[in-house]
Amino acid sequence: MQTYSAPLRDMRFALHELFDSNKTIELPGYEAFSPDLFDTILEEAAKFFTDTLLPINLSGDIEGCHYENGVVRTPKGFKEAYDAFCAGGWHGLSSDPAYGGQGLPMTVGKLVEEMICACNLSFGMYPGLTHGASIALKSFGSEALKDLYLPHFTDGSWSGTMCLTEPHCGTDLGLMRTKAVPQDDGTFLVTGNKIFISAGEHDLTENIIHLVLARLPDAPPGIKGISLFLVPKFIPDANGRPGTRNGVSCSGIEHKLGIKASATCQINLDEATGWIVGEPHKGMRSMFAMMNEARLGVAIQGLGVGEAAYQGAVAYAKERLQGRSLSGPKYPEKPADPIIVHPDVRRMLLTMRAYNEGCRALGTWVASIQDEVLRSIDPKVREAAEDFVAMMTPIMKAMFTDFGFESANLAVQIYGGHGYIREHGMEQYVRDARIAQIYEGTNGIQALDLVGRKLPANMGRSLRRFFHPVQEFIDANKDDAQIGEMVQGYAKAFGALQLATGHIAQKGMADPEEAGAAATEYLRLFGLVALGFMWLRATKVSLAALAAGSQETAFYEGKIATARFFFDRLLPQTGSLWFSIKSGKASMMALPADVF
Image (tube, rainbow, N blue to C red; front, top):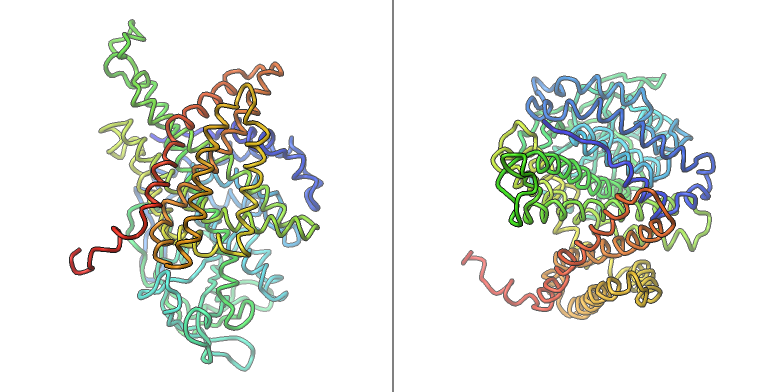
């Protein structure tokens, strides 16, 4: 049986103590909020999701979605849960108030997302896709399209999808064949086949709105010739209600490794009526508004599953009796000690804990900068914020999902044979977590994006948004009596990141394959250094709280102990990653393809 309790205390720590929520509510549009209100929202979200979504997670995985004659039904309880989700206002939590949303800051919205993903990742796919579609439409759609569709997206009565992939092309969208033919009334007839469309067909909403990439007849070849179209399942009538059925159909659903309660569909478009979103041949710019948000959302999926797996593993490790402690019995009144006394079990648990809490802190930092992108009226602040979020997006997407999958696997290992069977729900976490490393751009693609696009962008300007505050912290705290030694050790890892950055920039200019060969190791190196920065800050805040006489000694001492484990056992990976990067592409590219 799966158990989960939202880590509210750690969420409040990240929201209020690591990153001052009072600064967030100083931004234009957030003045009506308060730290106390944020806490209330998180508490209510925790109650609702654990009561409503968690109980149907395992059952939804077992039942899966049903497909028959073009109709998809979600598992038992999903429709009722979705209706309650929308009725409670959770669907429009961070959406624009101009279209009926509550306008909650991203910092709180991402923490709420984490709870949804921890309780039921499959369920979270449905509102998650709609939220991404609303961002693309709001950013590039006409006023008429926004006025018609965004209120329905916000209240959850209509859902959205992202239709990119075709049977013959995934990442290489330049090979796309879907066509859009202009009509005299300003609409387009869209024809083609799309696959792997999450939430492409289901029974949760009264209409499904597809954002479809397609080519106009005069489109130039390659990725520069792609446009974006809004294609509804039902064409809205004069009253803005679902009317005539459009030429969109579902020809099947995928039978998948995980997220089985999320309908992954094959979508056929047969001269379906659509409306262009944005400019002709500029569809990728519009779609990337949705994809970038989706990539950050997928990062949170990794964190949510990792946290759920960790909590399950902790509960089991405390109750499972097996063997005796190597240093002598710790519970002599029992026939054996619980397995949490064993060093290797503690290694696994602390690894999961350090990754989860470090990622939660980093995610909150990036979300706080997203709020500056959305709300700051200072152009220089917005520019710096956009640079930072753009650079951190591939790092978060790849690192959070890698760690989420690793945590799920460690949870199964802690359970042993009981983790491998369905009863406890641990094996579901492994299967569910695996997709997050693949969709919205595989983690290898994220690494290539980081070294190929983000590092050289604007002459390396984005790097300064991370490097400068880290260096300032090191300079200010390297001689600190309490954390100075920790800071000095961290400075070596930061130095390895700086050296690796210069190495890739130099080698990559002469030979792009050198940058590609180093990309995955570089992203992980960058990510670990970013987590290290979070753990340094967490340690300093925790020490200050204890010195001020806080009564929450267990919480803050736990933070400090977990930080020490991170610096002792996890951050040293940066050394081996730097050595791998320096080795270059030679051994990787030497073997002829026909020898594999």
